[in-house]
Length: 639
Image (cartoon, rainbow, N blue to C red; front, side, top):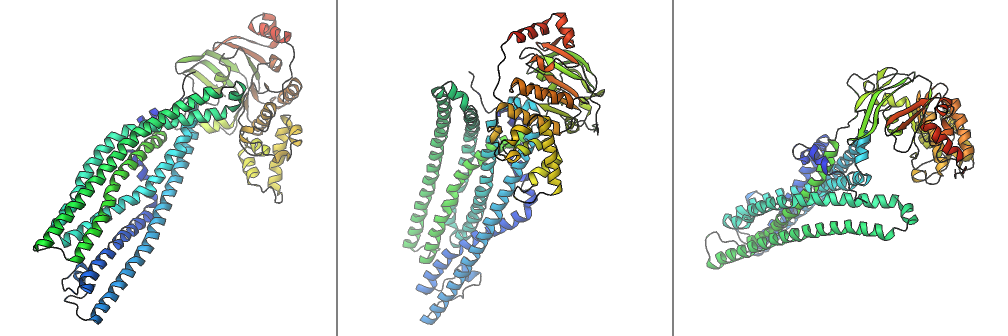
């Protein structure tokens, strides 16, 4: 059994340039909030620079009574000259206390404003990005879903977009912190001692260059890790969905080994990246530690030697308080570089997905029919999945209102042929026409509004029975999902429920629905798990009939019902398709014996066609299939 994967390795090829610029594009609509948040963040950082200056001024001016001017004196917040007398020192101390209180007040207010504005903006960007990504995935063509795993899509919609939100929420603020703190401290240190400022700031370019090399090294590793996560998520999603099969065949150990192997690969890649990352951060700490020691030696030597420009006791305190604060954002550069690369790897997948173009689209001058007659023509149609021919040179003319049965062995191409009618795929060669017009000339959604499909394994959504049937009509769905189950039933909701019930009666589903605990309001669980296979198919038929299509396709839609239920459904279908063009793919040939025409396919080609009686008389493949089924012992399926 081949190992599956997320299938998203190639989406990065859709990108041009740095995907982080695309992420910034999502921030543009919120620029007023961002501008205010950034301004508030800068004010917060500048307010944090005030307390160390106050400590230095208190030591030099209040405690020592020095007349040496400091930064606060230079900007006019403190008086110049020597401070003499207890009253003067106390007055100066009180002024410092007021300045400190105002600084802390500004810091508190601006901190709240910056965090609220920036974090809420990150949440809005996350919401917009997830909404756009989900909507884009939904609008991609069916060939995309055939080649990409659900686990990989979920990894992008959840893990990758959450990582981008975390980056905007945390690292953007850290970048502002670094710029404001390093810039502000550099100015203050240069004011007090240009020589020591050069010593303190010497590691900045070193850290910048080292971070650039670190990013270059870590980038391909994080790409690999993201793909490994997608493969692991896909494996877990497949196994959880296939729990019944695993139990039935007792394959616990087999699946455990497969999950464990992928988990081990993820572990090894993460540990390898972690080893280098932690080493990089340790080296940064060593560099900043060396600078601290050198600065301490230079400052102490100048004070001891009494050299001109030597720091005072207060300015030494200010200098080393700032030096300590300087190292934190400097060390954060490495972590931010690491977070940036993680975010970039996720952004490549998200925006690579958003750049993925659907292969089936509406033309610029698309036809939007209000109604169709339902005449369907296949003219030399050929289609292949990844260069593997599935439909070969099929030509059929189906009049409006005709019922056509399709028979043949599994893999004969019956389902694929009919998927070309609503343009789930486009023919590689030949033309599919509806009412004489190439289906590629219609507006895609307008065409699908007139074509309904009931599949062999229908998908039902978690919700009520009524909501799943109502899915077949937009207005009914809005009315059904918008009603209050505990409130009064208005006329609109009543009409919607009547249409749902009428469709269920036509599909022979009303009887079993009435026996459910809450009737049409019964919750059916994920994928309709609380219903049997036959019940799910009847709900799906009701959903298709509610759409009132001119063309309807039944893809073995009665395969999971017993013979009696199949007979009742078939009688209802016969009545309902009298004015519609119907295609019925059937495993049980009795289902299509009354069709206007039966088409027999094998290996993608039409090998026989005619009425049931004509094909029996011809003694070909259809006659052989009919005799084989006639000889079989009837078996009732659990409906």
